[in-house]
Length: 122
Image (cartoon, rainbow, N blue to C red; front, side):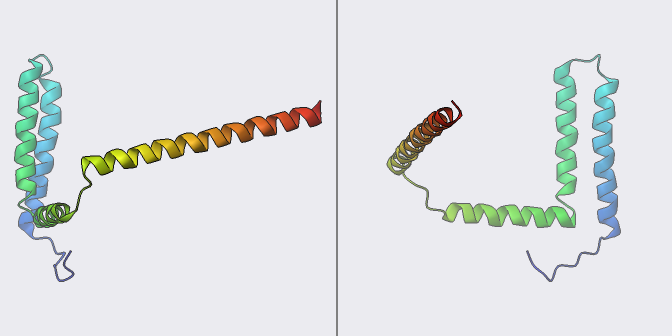
């Protein structure tokens, strides 16, 4: 990314990371404590806590850097020229034919060497 970015953690970021860890711990402990409750309610609760944890994480310095990285990566993916369906089909056929040819060659070589070894050993 940018080499000019300070890697110093602010006290607020540390508090946010502790809060995120507490949310994850709460999700794990709450899920096991409320095992008698419906699975649907537990899944909803864990997902809600996970969403809050991700939201808080994205407000930290590392979260902002990660968000910026994802945005830049997505813009690079949009620049890729993807093959057409016809090109993909042709390439797949070429690969399958090449694999079959190599497989047949290896089978014939194995058979030949097996026959030679059997001839030498008796």
